[in-house]
Image (cartoon, rainbow, N blue to C red; front, top):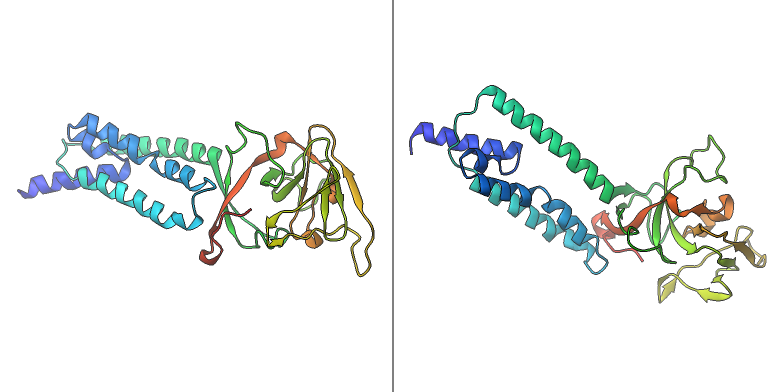
Amino acid sequence: MSTATASKRWKGLLASLILSGSGQFLAGARRRGIIWFLIACPFPLFLLGIYSLPLVPAKAAIPLLAVNIIVWLAMLHDSYRPIRRLRWWGWVILILLSLAIFDVYSRLAHRLFQAYRVPTIAMRPTISNGDDMIICRFAYWFREPHRGDLIAFNTNGIKGIPEGQAAKDVLFVKRLVGLPTDIVEIGDRSISVNKTKIEFGEPTHPIEYRNIQSGILPRGVESYQVPPGEYFVLGDNSANSYDSRYWGTFRRSAICGKVTKIYWPWNRMSTPQ
């Protein structure tokens, strides 16, 4: 192989580093390049969608990431081929096209998923402060939220949170306890919805919920009526949670998605329930 041919091959590799499949496309294998582009670009989102499924173990992130890297390396290996001469403005166009596609890709990814780091202890023991989670934004596109779901919601517009507070216009993660028209009752370490006692968390270690006035002595039962079209949430660490007991309920439009995985740190990787 001549030096000139080797140089052209590296240009094909470089082109695909800038935009997946472009090395094959510029080498004349246009259909091959388009196929690689259609595989390599959406493949990470496809794997992330699989990872967000409840039945997929949290530690499957490592093999799924390995599969993504293998596909990307296979695309680069296939792009190591001589390409026709590309002038400087051709490279500029390729870079600008790559940036435009990346912008669209980023917007789509954010529309479907969101990474979120928990800043407080309000959801312990289910979720600890410092946990990195994946929020599936499309979880409620085709179904309504279920009681017990760990949901993410926007606090902007919640009337019970005064303007100027640090909690205003941020994302909260809480457990959905009360659905529209439910009656939620919180006693001493127990919770009932519509007069039926319910438990969340592990069956052998159910989460204990405390009412606002709980202290050394029991203070009775607190009752909350959820208005039609509204939702009531609690933090699993109810003794240290700023939730619907304090600022009330919110509408369906505030819900951003469902927590599907804790992906970091390694010893905390799980599908929270």
